[in-house]
Image 1 (tube, rainbow, N blue to C red):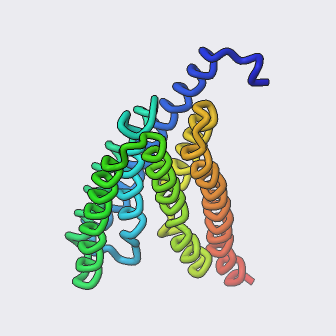
Image 2 (image 1 turned 60 degrees about the vertical axis):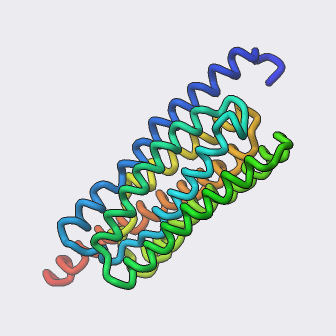
Length: 235
């Protein structure tokens, strides 16, 4: 099939997928806003975990670095979207630390410093690698690993949903945005022949589907359970 598609068409498809990914990524970045409004209003982080935002910040920083011309060719859409994402994640982490209890505050502050230290070491270390192809491979594998970690980080929340049989701590729009963004960048990576983009986003697509399935299952189940006591009381 590829033989019948011109390079110009591949480029157009790639750009369209990249733009869609940027749009859906913005939806992903703003989706936690209701959660952080609740944290600010209640002056407490409750059972919400801040670790996914730390993973997301590290991922955004490394992926933004991967997309820049010093590392890879023609991936500026990856750099721009992840740069914006890094600003959002940093803002959320600061809000989380501000309203967390002493133990969580100390833990999150330590993780934040570790993220900046690790990224600085990666960026400086990669520039010391004079072989451009080797530099691309090193940062590519790192970006792939951190992206997979980011997509896998909600697994703990999914486990909480199963244990509590409640979707309260797994916002629907966050799961939906994750699915749409990862699917778009899966296509972007395919059209750009870049396995460091399409492999982790393919995994993200699968996990996004799993989150959505979990959400609808337990959301519908909780609605049924709220109706059952009314039926029993009448009986």
